[in-house]
Length: 281
Image (cartoon, rainbow, N blue to C red; front, side, top):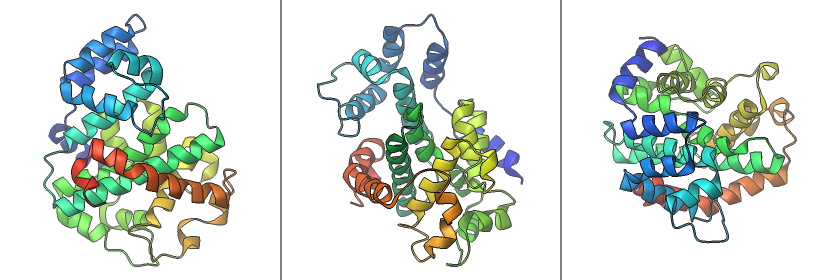
């Protein structure tokens, strides 16, 4: 099967709920109000609870108490709340995937770390519209879960790489495409914004002339994350070349700050989005 075959089957297996579709329609409608969006969110108590927990967490560091969904939309902004809605329903869509708990815990830990790293570095660099960076990191590797569901043996083969092999090159060898490309195709089926899909599609692209800042950030954040997980034995120069680091003004103190930010916020995000994974810590 090619990447389109996988994404087509995945879009039938992993379906976003009607609530997500309705919220997306309201956000796209210039005539809708904050209360309209909040009313639909409130129809799903689990979603409303998740948004309020995240809005009041240290992740956003809002000085006051956010006690209603309407206030969350007002304070955080429609785009940020939409990202939280995407995160919630994505996690929900993959709840019943056939995989070992340890595998899923590891998957979500890596995804959250990538999301935290890209958010931190993007904030430090003053990247415009940085609120979508977190969701780029969180969703960047969904394609692995797609292949895990449809062809587990392929994931095992793709993740069996040596310390001198790059994971995405191994994926291309085994599958004919990368997990990132599969992620992008699924998100396209879900009709998520182009600004989310394209950086995820280009996360392994070494041709930086064709990449925007979000793509470059995801490229770097993913590799920083992998240094702490499945690529911890890889030479850092293999994962992150000097050319890659020079694409954005990222210094050593920023990398250390990103690592510290992960340590501070990982448990909070995992405990809200994926409580089982938080038990690892």
